[in-house]
Image 1 (cartoon, rainbow, N blue to C red):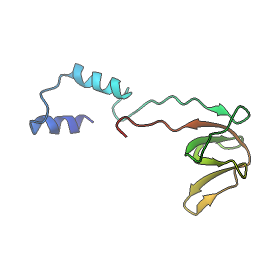
Image 2 (cartoon, rainbow, N blue to C red; image 1 turned 180 degrees about the vertical axis):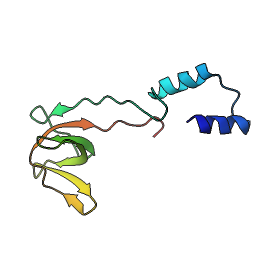
Image 3 (cartoon, one colour; image 1 turned 90 degrees about the vertical axis):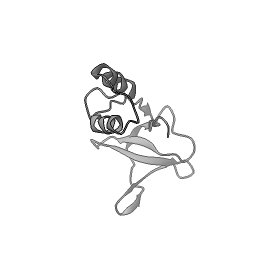
Image 4 (cartoon, helix red, strand yellow; image 1 turned 90 degrees about the horizontal axis):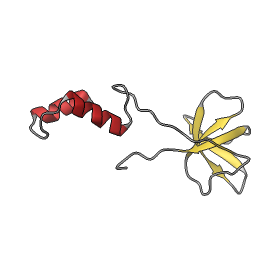
Length: 106
């Protein structure tokens, strides 16, 4: 981030920024350390509800220590993810799901 800002400054596309300016930009983007972004996800138990429509969400499984990106097929009551081999539908123990955060400007 700092190198991009310095390059823009050198090219005259932005004015000189102080360290305070850089810190304010990082804070507004949720960056607390250079190269790190903090995001808080609100995971919803599948007993409460499942996502409507076929949109990608993060899912947690009872026995896994990672979050998968996938979607819910309501007509089959099935969670679907993708890996390097294609579509996977073997997620029987999904316990929670969360919306994937939208990036600003996206």
